[in-house]
Image 1: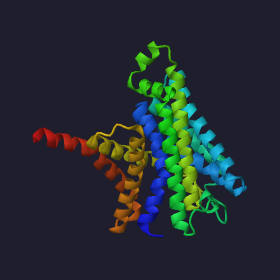
Image 2: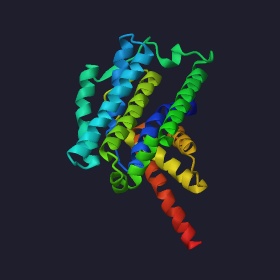
Image 3: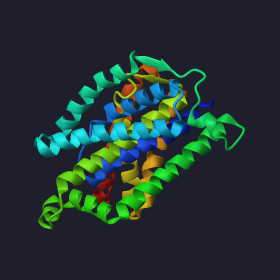
Image 4: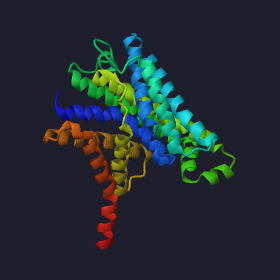
Length: 291
């Protein structure tokens, strides 16, 4: 398969996780490290269920629920025990490593001759193009669902909680519950992303989630830069740009491989790429002030 096509498909798989990062980071202003654990959780549970010949829809529902429970645990630790959200996420992520290893029973599960969403749903005869279409349909569905949620009364309360929690509390809204539900929803998306990725790559690995939050943050930052440049306001467009950010991120990594960068340096390359993205708004503001 072409390197850039693979990067495109991986970017679409990871874009679902990027949507979850966007909710926690941009809506609630919470850097949620649970992502590393819930991503692997979705992949491990999905792999085990697929190996057991469980229906795709049933597997997806279990994955979503498991990811939501992981996110809710982080929310409960943060809101009820008054522990810093970053530390709360680290605690849950650490615990999930053992849980994921217990679920898998070993460090790696290959999906050989196992039915996946990409070979059970046939839009086109070409395998790669069919995978692309399936992922686009799923991503569009998630964008539509999240857009509807954020435009609803509950979604407005979520956005208000992130902007001014004290004001929302003054109106009698249970902000703790909103945070817990928001983290649950975000990690359900992250688990779904892990579920899609194991089906695409053909295996689940206990270490597949290590550093995955960096990719999500990079995707959101790319989207945030574009949103800032063009003054995008519509929720749906912002979410679409987040997904685009995930694709651009993967394409950039594919480019580094194509020019001969040693694959063992990929983590370093990823860190430097995120650093460059984070620095862009700073240099742009500096350029404007000097101009």
